Length: 257
Image (cartoon, rainbow, N blue to C red; front, side):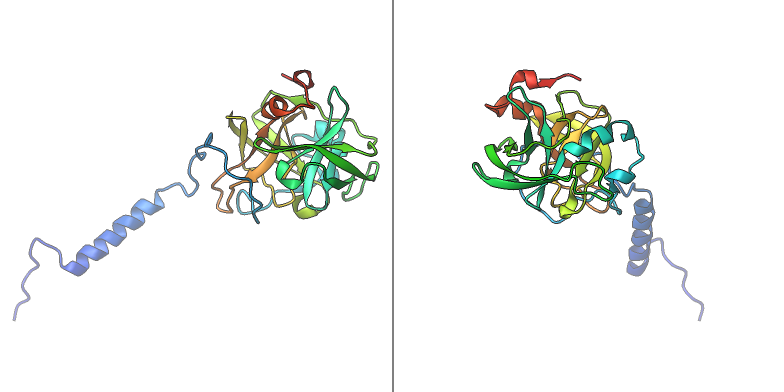
């Protein structure tokens, strides 16, 4: 018997197959990494998370092996960076009332006696100072704390700035490991928050200074939402917002530089 030709409509199986092929074609045309994520949202409660990794690889470089874009300023700044209580990072900053270490407020409590280690790094090239300090200011919004040291390191305190740049860097102690650096892109700044992309951090990086291209401290890293597929962003609080909230820091301590 002759086979009857197909009618104008597809069989149910044909419709499913055609739909699957169409979805496949559309999916192949999509960008696997979306455009920069929305920023300037209301700040969330500070939270310690396991990963703030932006992309499939962790792009950390040991500080004394670094030869990247910030090489002209990094060695003048890195001696001011310390590991705090083995679980956070801080930076010695210049202030009218005297140098203090700035870090994240969720790392310490007011009145705490913290242990700070300077020049904990591969091939250390500075003063390997270990000292204690007292937390003299602490806040969660903005998320910052100031620590007055018992002994100052032989390091030049970093200056605060209100001037952003296209590229940013963070000198940090990720997971409490020896000091390293990572770079990334500035996204935006609003509501006292500073957003950046492609800039890896981990637990232990909280409190690190976010440096502009000239090596001045633009903000303090506090939170992350980066993913290994390249989506998301990390953020911190601006130096401007911190100075405005602080009784210790003065307007004269920050400049457009």
